[in-house]
Length: 299
Length: 156
Image 1: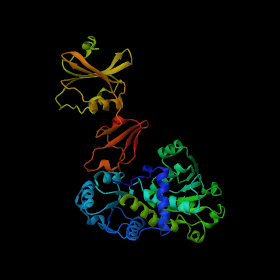
Image 2: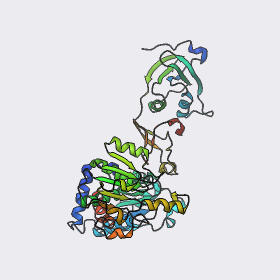
Image 3: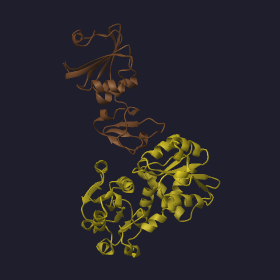
Image 4: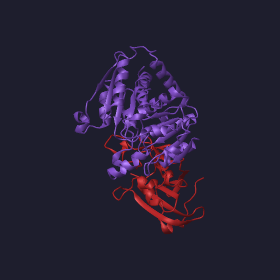
């Protein structure tokens, strides 16, 4: 049976732990540099991407494999009206695995349905982005045990797929969740209910300062300007969710700040110098985690 | 045990010689049952509908009679989504030859449209919508959207 990675919800805790253990071994350079020699990875990105795409390609190159892509969406046959199903069937004939990012939710599941090679979801609309979640977990695990951590999710929690997937995954680790988001961008009620039903303690706050002393992880997401009627109201809201050295002065010593990037105004650049700042480490971790994912589906 | 249809019902809806009688439909759901079965003004079935008729068990109920068509198991089970108490009577030569309840299916395909406009199942892809039937409602297997209530509004 073809192995796909579509949603973090398809993983149980044991499977996540195993994949993160493999990523750790890879990170320590304990891997076969030719593990995927002669294999081809197709990267189908129908939406812009910098980190995800480059880190998948870097991951493939580290194993001695090759990546191919369609270039821009305008240049591919979907611009001529070809269905995704047909594109996937065709690309299955060219590559040994497919990484896909697509604006429609469920696109990766559809791709898995039509592909004859493994499919990895690199983000489908507001839906799933499992590789980001796995590298988030990996980064947290580098600093502390995942079990029972207290995490603050800050920013756009309504549309932020990375926050949704991370919250779901952390429910497997008995984490305590604190949410801080502007009005209208709160965690969807359905997800809130689902997490509570899984036994996760979820608390909403208006201000990060209410919980800064007790959280182990501060996970910041970008508040998109287009969600607001005008620039003034955006800046007003965005500034009140900004992470600064002054705010972090009240944080636990071992607390870490994560952000899936790109950041705009959410984190003061002065925070970059603090030991709390782990977002560039997090981004770098995309390579070993995605290497572990490629090995899992292609070997 | 085979039994005759209640002759009193004939006063309201004529007995049929061959076909299917869907009885004990939740009151007000008969037209949705017809919709689920894909019956329109252009299909060939002879159709009788009674709504809000008195029922000993239910207080009120709807009944749908379809001449010359016996429903498949899949069609029967789709009815369970909106009317889980419905019973199906297969009629041959005016007699009830088979009587069965409906079972809620584990999965339904091509029957309900996903309400999420961003779902891949609402595009021109060569797929049918697909939902898992869960205690919370219908769960889209593509985008994970859950239709918790008002399922009939999304019937294709």
